[in-house]
Image 1 (cartoon, rainbow, N blue to C red):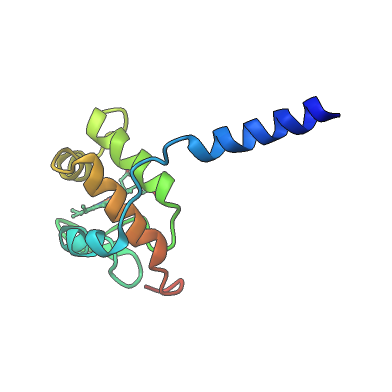
Image 2 (cartoon, rainbow, N blue to C red):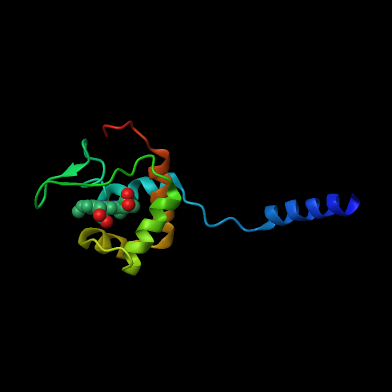
Length: 111
Ligand code: HEC
């Protein structure tokens, strides 16, 4: 019994000691989204240049998903001309900050 208690105690401590991944800062992320807003963030989730097409909604999306998608564009694993170019210009910290901002900003289904 004592061994179990001790093991539990040690594993809890180890969990606490694991360094948290560099967390994104939504405040730092917000200004970095200025270059995203021309496509993501238009009511109805469409942009009109060079033709009208749909753009995924990011507000309210999980931060981990956004970071994973941006990394996939940067590495070339996921291909889309605009997004590959955009992701290439972002550092990992930019991605984390932007993702934290989008995760915390949900303005309802229409915008
Ligand atoms: C020129 C228009 C445009 C701009 C600017 C743009 N995006 Fe995108 N983004 C798109 C389109 C279109 C897609 C869908 C691409 C696809 O099908 O893979 C997309 C996809 C994404 C995805 C994946 C969404 C999903 O549901 O899988 C993320 C994350 C993303 N963009 C983040 C950003 C961020 C962050 C910025 C600014 C730093 C940005 N985008 C700027 C057009 C744009």
